[in-house]
Image 1 (cartoon, rainbow over the protein chains, first blue to last red):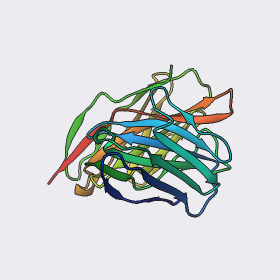
Image 2: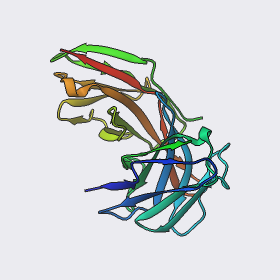
Image 3: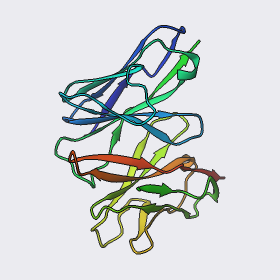
Image 4: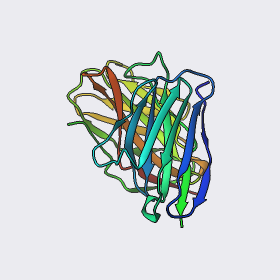
Length: 118
Length: 118
């Protein structure tokens, strides 16, 4: 169990357009989902924490108006990159925690989305 | 402040030999979890093994074992009998409790790129 599905796997879009990335927990309820960004050969940078039914908590330096996060249900969170620019090109990966988990529970990750903005 | 340090940017190991990937951490939490993830070139994050801060025995999971030394704040990953398919990026991570909200964050190290040689 603990499968997280992320869609799309890759997307190419034109500068100025918006892109939506979906993250679904397929076989468990996830009260919390995390969105990370990863630059080539670097570590995962936490962008925001998404809690079901409430506003996302953004990390310092992350523009909340640019990276819109919605956690509509216990199994779905979406990240929308608005008015994308080439510098937004990156690998975005979501992860989820089980509803009943605690401090020693691992994160379960989606397969990531490679975004290229032309 | 919570921090994860991986001091080995890259490692080589001969096939069938064992290898140790280093991870040290810093936290003021009493309850925390330590996790190792594998990231192949395809990008997905694969959960390997975890250790809870109160666990006295080192965790093992198949060919993976976690050498947990709490006093030294280290949580090294040992891979025995390395295989070519073990070549990947490996990340050490730690959970951190946000006491004001009762939620958790996960902090990742910078990773170690392991190359298994035939």
